[in-house]
Length: 207
Image 1 (tube, one colour):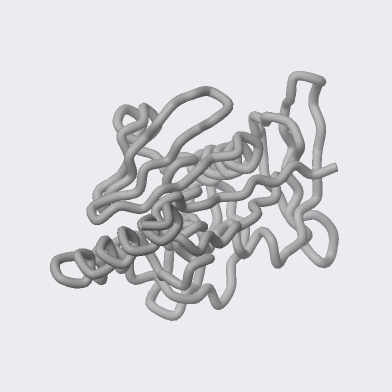
Image 2: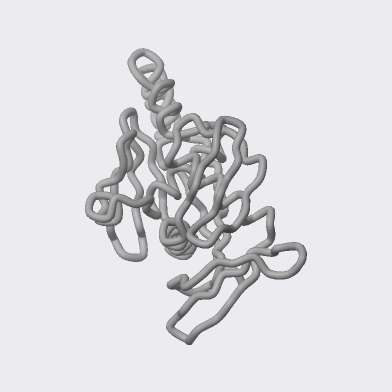
């Protein structure tokens, strides 16, 4: 059974839950990704606490993983036209150019995507960032337009589970990226939202 999480904002009165499906219902360490068969179905080989395993990913889901990775890395990234597996990584043809992701990067990304789906992360949007809480571990990280405050971003300079959770939550609410959200929610516009939220809070309290 696949574990899912509900990413929800505690700042807005109308919450929209976005389920993230785990690749595997256990924490994983990916050893390799390769295409299998004539259809070149992506297969991941990984280790868990229960041993070494492999899982096939649908092409549609794998395309979404690549898209999520590139949208977090590239602010103006739009659409993937095609991709193919190479010896050291994955070549991607997109509407706005060509990209290459080395395997170590996509391995780490998929491991953290899977972790984000297992840890029930909660996303709270503010005027200048998103605050991501892990209710299981009791930790908090802040994601802004530059990156994240967690060790994966600060010391390893790689996409972290908090950025993934933030990006998917924003997309579920119709925002293309965190940069786009922050640009649209500053100054007067944000003041108006805060006022609206205050009015809702007063109404809930019967004031």
